[in-house]
Image (cartoon, rainbow, N blue to C red; front, side, top):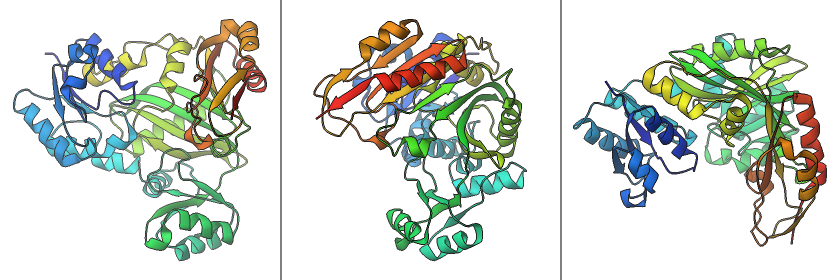
Length: 409
């Protein structure tokens, strides 16, 4: 019997379309729910989709549930899936209300609320930074007295470094608390600042067991990368995860996190730190990574992870093995100031020196408005590259960062 999958919002961001494409390639019957009209679907999506329902807001669980129940009146639904962080909780609520298997509301909550997440993981033996939820400046100060500076203050449900601030004094804590609205009773996450190298660990799980795993390294750590204009930040997916020392500990920690949070069949994105206090878990999203990291994994491992996700979701079995042929990475190229891009320098030199290593690149046209440093790795110009040797790729990306300049006025 052909599986019938309901997919949330097939159009945005653009890589959402790859999930639909992959489901169609393995013969799945696909319904979708989105915020645009059916007429606005492109020809490929119209071809791949069996049915489409429009709602005003895909994060409104009530509206999405009504759409799902309409679909259920006409056909059995095997799964309802979302792959964007903002859609995970509402989809879990709909899933449970409609009696459809998949990620539970409990799991979705624990993967989004940082204090609750860390409390559950610490209880299960996973090493994490000391943390708590605070609803006032007084509570934040009390935490600081117990734990000491430096600390991190961030939204309870923030993604990555979004809204996060490092604080090193009572005065900085007061400013950060004000920015997050603690004086108005808003709750925030506060935690011990962990020194060390930062990376991430991405998986595909099947019935609570990790069946595919990938590790990446940030240079520099995300907080610094998102605050410092002159840095051309990068992250690299290693092809040494199965052979290099240290990754077994990361893998074991990841599997334990999956078990504690009761993650079923899903993609995950986990952040970690390794430093003087050893390996520390940071946070998790019950969804694929951002910044199109799956593109890098596909190139490095001769895989189609969208298709593999589809096989796990719809067929309940893996179908591919990672080759670990290349390490792959992205380097973000920041404009030298805010304004509009005027020109680039160094691109020809990079193409000549490292042409065989290039995967693809994005260089916005002259006159394009710049985006702020905090907007992320793909906000302005970027280059993605590959090499069989991880250390050599690091050297190449460093060279690209020194060579290519994005000029603005």
